[in-house]
Image (cartoon, rainbow over all chains, first blue to last red; front, top):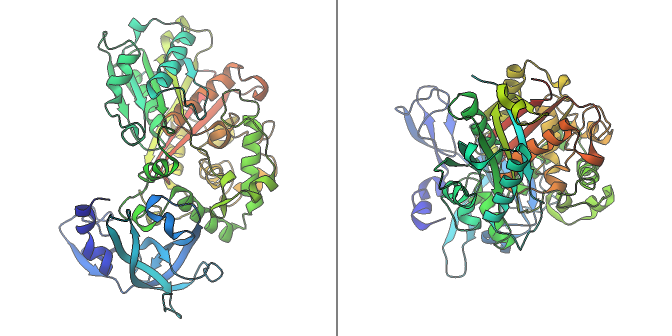
Length: 135
Length: 389
């Protein structure tokens, strides 16, 4: 992804800031500028998520795209945040440890890099809640 | 609205076709469909080309004009339109063609699809395909297509007790069917053990759970049903054409194991045709991964939610079973040139209903269904075809 495209989303990606619809109360992460439930955009406000949730499902990726080939194998998961919304991220733990229903907590980590001279992406990953050393 | 019929079909061989270019592939499929329909080029009113990613695979956009030109139709100035919905581009091109004829806007329409995927290296192909998911919120996090479908599989196994052997049985069945299809990329039989012992791509999906990277093209000729018999003794009638959207990202789906766009498109198609799942004799479904065929069986209403794995293992979906699925070999064995797949599925239904499917013929089939998916379920296209109007 290009630099401006990543830069534009920094606060959302770094700080887990999504949106909330003031009309119906629904939370959105990734952020949305229009509430799909109310289908209106006038009452959308930023919302910072606490960063705790559980693993809804996961996989261990062994074959990745160019940007991630140095990181294989890694654990990709859909995390259900305690506030409601689901997101796709990586979980840092051993393959033996990961399981559906595992409680997790967000951490700030390097996501990937485009090449040796290219951009390095940072963002939110998750670690087990009870042991969040992040190693 | 007018009823629509398919009066001709054409399909290239599917595979890693190093010696053939994108334009050659499409022209080959288009010309064989036109010859099959026994029409002249001057009769053609419009052309719809399904293609996912010419820009990334061959650095070529403006594919409608390219195809019209190389099909010798630019001098006739026919309307030519490229249609894109990721891996559902072909199904959508077919649907646009059907709508164009049904509306009365055009009479004779070619609907085709083509993808040339092997002109770039595998990593570039994988990256291009990831564009069918949400680049900003899935791709950037390290999601790949096998990874997304692996997460569907993991939850399906957890919730319904689906096994890796049941997933593998989809690949084994589709390779068996592919072994009887001279156009298929893989015409070899494989065993359950071969699938389970193949390298892991995204746990629990092995490489033999995944459809391959493929070059290929397919095309059909559409005409108003009222005049179809002028061109052929065996027109195949379009009984329903339905399309539905779902969330682009898998994580936003109400149920991760259900492609709700498939459910919606299926229900619309059944309603339009006045049929129910039990009326369908056989289907070509979107088995980009083995788990995808299991979900399709459930989401199209052929079995209850959670029973797709067991049904496949029992032989229910084999040729000769209660509801044969993917007699062509599916995306798994026939290959998956993404923009061509949705049209190839219709070509297979036509061959089957005409009784021209050779060794893989499903005896006595009257009604066939196609199911084409974009991404992890952001788009679903379902068509129903019949021998009788």
